[in-house]
Image (tube, rainbow, N blue to C red; front, side, top):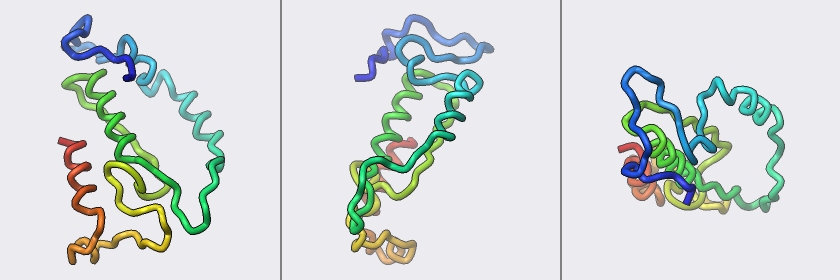
Length: 136
């Protein structure tokens, strides 16, 4: 869906000793930090409050698990067999989709480590399966 080539259709394989760089469609999404430092800095400086209001009795909808899954797929496709880092800056818990740890209603408390120890965490098993599948 992102327009990336399948690994078998890649035009060239990385050469040992040369830095691995994204090519083709993946270059639209990934660049070395030195090439995008200005854009990253200006984006962070221009961050504003979320323009989509959330009711006072609800949490914002965040699908962090899906976002991490896409980021990992993008990195794996663009840099096969290479080390990489994905940094996630989140302002709250994942409330929707894979990796969900709490619902959007504030009346539902976020689980604590005591809840996990007592096997009383509603979304723990599903979320831990998603997270372990992302990083294996």
